[in-house]
Image (cartoon, rainbow, N blue to C red):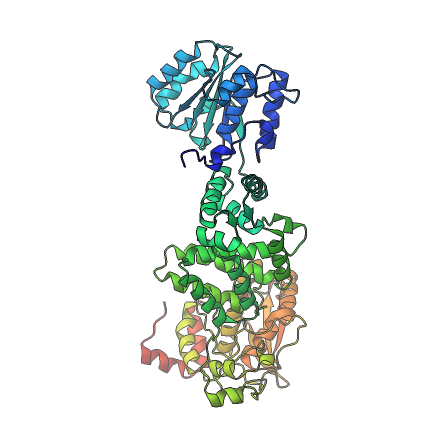
Length: 596
């Protein structure tokens, strides 16, 4: 047991050719050694476990080699190389700045710099975690670092480059070490496993590489841990069990449920994840990462961004072919919002469940906001079915009757009619209305007995054809303005300028030959053209559907030159409304309403 050496030390690189993931830096240092153009100070910076100290030691060994090879590598057989490998070299001095960060420690180092090497040409001073030096120690080190003796070379290593004084940075050649890719770590782990005689699955090594987060030392430490647990037979199932990593199969199954709109199955799957001891925060973050991987898998060019095993990559490509890009955008946005709210939420499980429900319902939503911003809306999810209801469900009509509620409609629809819009109560949005209309709108909305179809649930009318209403009802001015403003509030961000104009428009209604015509005055031809295009796409469909008038027409006219329009203040608006609605003054008096 005493002879055991961990893999991070046993398989530590001893030549530049064996350095993993830092090919550019290794090549630069080898070229400098071959050409004899050595700097007096180097700064190696980067994340932990990526080879900074290892490269510093290899560099120190190579420049003192008495018989270098033609490719610039150390021979490993001369006295200097043997002393380095046995840990008795007097030419290499390592200082841990984390525990030796005072001025006295630097002065001791400066005294050692004056002594020339006994064997070899250079004395190399490796200062690890150099950012831990105090300001006074940095200042005491400046002069020696700028003009050291010809035989002295300093190599500073740090994980926090921003803490180094600019005066130190200007005296060093700076080398930025990068995180190692998953493929490089997997290949190195596979090489270690083959030398040790272990059997391993590529998916298991991929999980270890992802867990290491770009650090080879962390990857080898995790590798040793998994080997101890599995006894040398490294499988994917036992690896995720030992590392407490959520199996990606859960995410594939969850996305499949979402695409089918199976909300109950999705919630049960999330409950299964929680029962295994996983938290909702890492789960929702993992779901966002999974959706991102599905998104990049839609194209063969971006599929190379996936750092997974080949069999897992095939599953991503297969699932990506069944996902719409708009849904992926919205689902990722929903998961990111949930991840941000999760940290401050008191009911964390509910936050994740709401995100799952929204993602599931967004899979069948192709509204005007599709792909631009998520529609924050929840449709009925659960339904209570008795034995008799279950028998009648298969024979239910395709379109629900007007007197049925939204929940009854959802439970009575057949699978063929599952994607058809349901009749739900209208959502009253008062934020876009003027203050004088808010109190009136509340009373009017409460008195409205007929239900309307919400514009966000209506199918996208790409062909411009509206859904035929059940009857042509008379259109009141207040009802028209409510639905007009409701449509404005749902416009995506690209329509921001047009939406601001629509909020101040005052359409006028008149009945011509049995048809209700709404005339809207606009200020110029460009706005008129934009309004007509919007009307042909969504606006006319929305107004006809929500107002239950299939003969409603929208007429856009440009204001004549020199013509002025009167701008009503809130008192004049209230007076006009009282004139048009005789019951309004009674409501104002009864509820003691006042203008804001």
